[in-house]
Structures are given as structure tokens and as C-alpha cells.
Length: 478
Ligand code: GLN
Image (cartoon, rainbow, N blue to C red):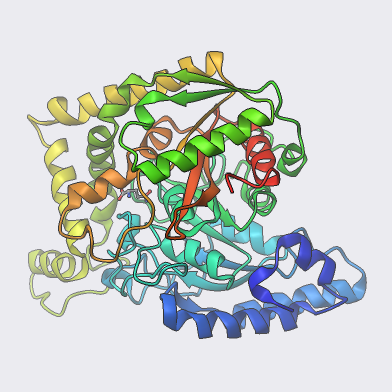
């Protein structure tokens, strides 16, 4: 069995015939540990948990009981998602020894479906970043080009799926952290509608923007994983009480006659190769019978500014809980209460978290609240309205994920604003809370993958998967 090329369907076919769940988990763990020296995609492995889950799947199979839709499938989980009894660091020194007392709902659901949790993946500290260089535990390298970044902040999960050490993975997306690394690593990444997947057990960065979503090597696997984790959860009041359709059915649906919007604001800052590949991708969709219309989303220009106000404001509040008392490692310099706070946070947080806490505190402070935070919220409403209006005339929007493919490690670390620009096309969908995904759309001359972004109306993941499925079947832009 070749773990690196398995899909969920291949696991279903092979399980109990060519291999047992225990054999597959053992091989996946061995392979993942061996590959990790190259990429640093995983922060830790969970062999005991994986082998116990695999044994349970094997026993169910032996008894003739259905072991679930993800039976035996090796899954990697971003280290901002809580796992009971398994250290969860959020890529931060501050939580280096934090062992959660409960599992995130998404983790519970995928393990109930028979999924095998093989390890926790590296990420930018508290999911803040676009390159995975902000992890306190070292950067992740892009498996397709080891001198380049995998994207961020879910770089470890994207890399794990690309190198084939996990069949699927969970990441989190606040402003692009699933789609951008998926694009850089050449895999499928899905940010569902806000509220589609419970955030219970997802470490809060910017709560009104945070999503959990899947990475996979094909559209169908992403659909299966999303179906498994989606749906109302009483533990998260913002999780939607909306029926979860069978997404895998949509994948084989026809796309001729679908109206697609191509936003002109998303095409102007592209490096020419990315632009050419997206244009080729759009031509493929036209050939499949889609009607392409140029549209305008005029508030796009203000998206980055408004995101970095709203996200930092929420982060400054969410990160206040790491005080040396409840979760975090406490500094040794804790003689007074003020010192405990100051040193614990000063030693524990990395530079990007500190920058955001300061920025967020500033924009929420008396006197600046109206000028910055309130204005950013108004821009957010305008961005969301722009999408609502666009979806009156089109069924889906097609766009690039990132203006450029994976860049070199170190290339943008000195310039946070250049780094923030990586998310120019992904932040808008996050601010609007609509479903969006990255699907592979060919490679540059240097062999670097480029992702095409598909965005649809709230809760219309089905149309998004239908389009992505047809595009993939047509061979993408290759
Ligand atoms: N790169 C963006 C940021 O740094 C988005 C991060 C994310 O989606 N978690 O905030």
C-alpha cells in the first residue's frame, strides 16, 4: 500500500482486503515521521490514539459493523484545534505544555466517522500569518519546493496532504489560511460558510471570522470530510441549524448554463503567470458550458485594511486569556501579579502576536474606536453587500487565491505589509462569511502550483463543489 497516493475511496476499497486499519495507521505514522525531517509539517504524532482508533475500526469490520465513512483514513489536525489529552500548542511557546481537557467538535465527528488522527500540524502562532514562518517551533517547508513557504497559517496541514502523510487534514481559516496554503501546495482547501462547522474547540483568533475546514488531494475527499464535520452543534451558538446536503452528489452535477462572475478588482495585481493560469482555468469552465461575466466588487480595495482592524481587535480580546494562570506556561519572573502578566506574555508571544495585540488594543481604545473599528465594520458590511448583489446575477464567482505562487522562505518576513498582501483575494470571502475554496489550477514554469478560488452564496457549498468537481474532472488548467 502506498500511503502517499491514497484517497478516501481507495481506503474504502482496500480496507479489510488489502490492508487492515492497523496496518494502514502504522504505515502512515512511519511515513509521516520519516518525511517530517524535510518539511516540519507536524509538531507531534499521536501513535497511541491512532492505533487505538484503528483497532476499533478493525474490530467493527470483523463484526460486520459499518465503521463509518472515514474508516481507517489517516487525518492530520492543525495544532489550533483542541485534542483531548494531546498537547495543543497553537504554534506558540506560551502553550508549549497545554493539554486540552476536551476535543473540538470537528475532531469528535471525524473520529466517530472512523478517521484516524495521526498527528498535529505546525502552523503560524495562533493562526496569524501567511507563510508558516511565525511558528515558535520553526517554519514549515513546501514539500514541492523545500526552499519555499507552504503558505499559512495552516501550512502544516497543507504540506501533510501534499506530501501524502495524511489523506486529508483539518485547517482553520480566518482570512485565507486554508485557501492560500492549499493554493501554494497544490491541494484542495475549503473554507465553508461561517457557522457551517462548529468552532467549539477551535482556539479563538478572531471569532467572527474563524472557520474550520478541510484539505484534501481531490474535491470529493474534501466534500466527504466537510460533510462529516458540518452541522449544528449545541456547544457553539454560532453554528448554523441548516441541513447539510450530500456534497458528494453535487460533484458529478452538470455545470453547463452556470453563470460565473469574474471580478475585475481581483485580476489587476496578478503576477502574469498566475493571471495566465487563472485565465486558462476560466477558459476550461467556459468550455464546460459556463457563462462568464465580468463583475465588479468595488469595496475590495479596502478589504485588507478593514480585516487587519477587525481581526486584530478581536485577537487582542481573545488573547487576553493567556495570563499565566489558566492555560499558559507561567514565567519564572512572577513575583507580583503585574510581573506575571508582563513576563508571561512578553516571553510567550512571538513578534506577530504582539504586533496584533497592540494594533487591536489601539483600534478599540476610546477615541479611536469610531475612527477605526466602527469604520472597518462598515466596510465589512459593504464587502458583504457587494457579494450579495453579485450573486443576484451570477451563481458563483471565480478568482485567483493569491496574487503569486509560493514565495521563498524569508522573502517577506521583514515586511509585514507585503506579507499581509498575500491575502488580498481571500480576505473578502472571509469578511462576508461565504463559502470559498481553492482548487488546483495548473503550475508555473518553475513547477509551482496555483489555485483557483471559487466563491458562492451563504450555505451554497453544493454549487461550489459542483464547479470544482467538473473543473477537476476536465483536468484543471493543465
Ligand atoms: N494571513 C492572514 C492573517 O495573518 C489570515 C490568517 C488566517 O486565516 N488564520 O491574519
